[in-house]
Image (cartoon, rainbow, N blue to C red; front, top):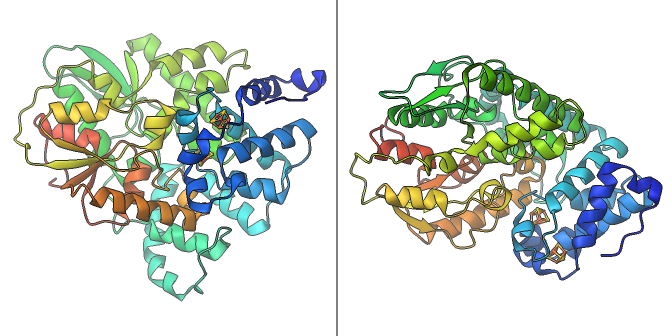
Length: 437
Ligand code: SF4
Ligand code: SF4
């Protein structure tokens, strides 16, 4: 694609990066076929190619984004299916990230929407606040029916979004997991030492996931540390275009992980929520222009691994009988498109005794996508219904996924237990059956 940035514009490293990405696009449109919003809405402007044009116009003309541009960028899930499909290697993620920052900076959203986004950005990354808000949401939820019914809409209003938020609140919350600063020694001879990302929403909604990871790792000779003063990885605010907050969190995490690595050694920083993993692996890029943090950020990104990547290098010891359990493996977008981890989790599950089934249309997002299921509830619901219908065709006993957002989204529409891949692997190697403890 031909671009027309001025030399002054190209002196800005972000614009230079956007120029490189835009020039790689050859308009072929292959990406439209796998884009969930194009598949559902059939509008070119809700396809990757259409959005690339909109972003190009916005950046080249250096104009504030229009309401129409914002509408189509907001509808993008950042699922990155387009990056998997694109034959020209267009790095859509870095382009849309830049567009979101520009929208946040230059576009004035209606007040209710600004307020909702501010609340989400403030509450979700803070586990104590998030826990309190979930308890409140649970109390308020019975009154949600009193809110006026709103039609399904491609541009939902505040009430529709509040309803969607209340619907996501769980029936009850488990007790909090172990605190930052905890160290779990290896059982037997120590073969490795890793940090385990504590996460923000996940540690409130499902501390059992990291507990399963700790149990499995220590049982296989790996010491696990929950690094003190670690915070949310920044993914939530990054996807809302609030890069000041996201980069501050990234710098904070880099500092504490680096200190831990220097003082006690770390073989890896393991992540059980693939949405977080994708962003931590991108810290090196996000901070490439930061004189103080560029090097450390690149080193931290290199240390970050999805838990399944690390387990592939360990010989797991199967112990329980689970040969009859059929598992539908839901491939989280952030794992398959963001990190290109596709077959590894399935191979681990198969090797450890599960009958693993691929889900038809597995490239399509389930509609979770960070805060997307709150901000775009109707598109998200349609994607969830489609995902659940596809999962049902393989008649699973359980559904496995590697990302808490997908787990909550899918569990909201099915009675089949939805578990994390690591819970199944822990069970297969001597831990409790998921849901039994
Ligand atoms: S990230 Fe997903 S929703 Fe957004 S343009 Fe690409 S395929 Fe479509
Ligand atoms: S598939 Fe790649 S090159 Fe083709 S239109 Fe989409 S982004 Fe551009």
